[in-house]
Length: 456
Image (cartoon, rainbow, N blue to C red):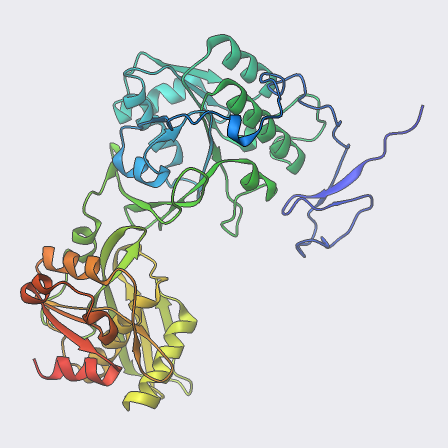
C-alpha cells in the first residue's frame, strides 16, 4: 500500500509545499509551516453539497425573484448589510478579541427570535455561559436554541433536521471536520469547514453568520480563501480604550461596502449611535487653538469629526511627528506644503495630530482640516467654534474638489455650524438656499483658507 505523503501548510497564508521551510515562500513569515496530511478530494461531499440539484440554465430562463432580506432589528447592522440578511447568504464577522462580535450577535437573536427560529452554535462557550451572557444582555427569546458543538458533521445534520431560519457559528476557528487530521483552526480545517457551511447555506436557503478570529496583524486568521468563499465580510473596529465601535463592510455581494455602523459598548451590551456626528464633536473645548472640525463621508453618511493639532518647540535635534487617526505620511506631506506654499515653518517644531473618538480619517477631504489645526496651534490662534472645513490639499498648495459637498454642508448646518470653508470648485454646485443658510467660503489655495480665518 502506497504511503500517504504529508504536506506542509503555512498557518498564516495557506501556502502548501511538499517539503518544510523555515521561512514561508508565500508570506515570508518564519516557523509557520506545519505538517498536515492532505485532505481527501471527497471531503464534505456527503455533507451539504448534494442538497441542491445542479442544472445548467440559460440566463433568460432564470426567473427574477424579489430579493428577500431578514431585518436584524439593529438599524446600524442592517445599514452595513445593505438592508438586512439575505436568505442563503454566508456572512463573516471579524474583529479583535473583546470588540463585541458575540455580543451583537446575541443581541440580534432577541429581535430575530420574535418570529424566527435561531440556532446559536458555540464552540467557545458552554450552554450555561451563554445563558449568563444572555441574562446580562436581556435576551429572553424562546425561539433561540443553543448548540455547544464543534463537530461540523453533527452541526450540519442538526441544521437539516431542525431547519432553523438563521444559524450563528461562533467561531469558525473552533470548528473541526473529523475526516481531516489537522487540529482546529488550521488552514485546512478552516477552509473545509467554511466550504461545508457555504454549501449548506446555499442548498437549504438558510443564512449563516460566522464569527472569525484575527491574527496579531489584524487580518482574519486562516487562509485568504476564507474571505473569498463568504458573501459578506464585516470588520469590527475600535480601540480598547474607547467605548465606541465601528462595524465596517469590506465585502458585500448584496450591497455597498462603503457603509459603516457606529455602536457604543455599555454594561448592557452594544447600543446604536444614531447620530455619530453629534457624538464625535461633543465636549469640544471653547476658544482653544489647534482644533478644527472636518466632515468625512462614510458611505452615504456624512460624519463630523474633531481634529486636534499641537505644535511646540522641539527639545531634540530632529523634530518629532506623531499622528493618531490620520495617515502619518500624509501629515508629513501637509507639513511640507505648509512650509513651501504658505510660509509656515515647522522645521524646529514638534507636531502632533489626534482625531477625537478613535475615528480614522482616511479620506483626502480631511487634509484642509488637519492643515488648519496645525497652523492654528502654531500661531496660537483659535479656529471659531462655528467653522467647519474640508478639502483635499495638493502639493502646489491648491485645494481640490471633493465629492458629496452638498451633503457635507447640509450636515454641518444641521448641527449648528454657521461657516464652511470648502474647495472653490465645489461652490457652484451648491443649491442657493444652502448658500443663504450657511456662510460658504470658497478657497482656491490654503492661503485663501487661512485668510478667511484671519478675517473673522
